[in-house]
Every structure is written in structure tokens, then in C-alpha cells.
Length: 97
Image 1 (cartoon, helix red, strand yellow):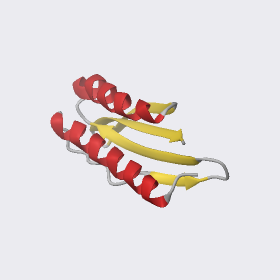
Image 2 (tube, one colour):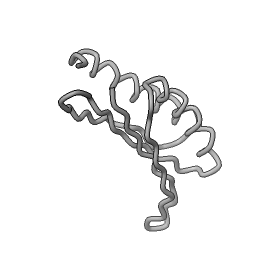
Image 3 (cartoon, rainbow, N blue to C red):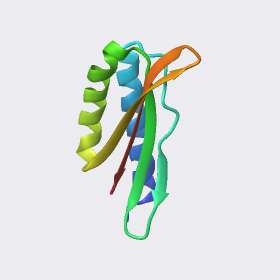
């Protein structure tokens, strides 16, 4: 099992990296937190972010996915959203350690 300190470090590393990539591409969204689900044998980390500029989506997701893959097998889902005139792609991810 992962210690509380390790969980907090992983959570903060993910938030910092995702936000730095979003900032690099001048995206307005910032990730607040990563959710942790403690299971009997594993710990599941879950989070999501938005990309508003569709032309940035491939570069942003490639860079973030490359970082997340260092934690092992990551499940990533994306969905294009059009809400009240706003268009963006929401990306959710999760992995277990």
C-alpha cells in the first residue's frame, strides 16, 4: 500500500504538471485536484482537465499522457463538449498503483 505522503506527492505532481502544460499552451482551465480512491489492494488516482482550443488538444494531451504513463497503465477518455456556445474537450484519466 502507498503511504499518505506518497499519495499527496503524486497528487501534487500531477496537478502541477497538468497545469504547467495547460499554461504553456495558453489554456484558461486549471486543474484543482486529483481524487484518490483507496481500495483493499490498490490506490486509484482520478482526475480531469479541459482543453478549449481544439488545435491545442493533440499537443496538450500528448504531453500530459506521456507524463501520466510513468505511473503505469493509464485509462484516458476524452469527449468533445458544446455547452451554451462554449466548445471544449474534456479529458478524464485514472490509474491504479
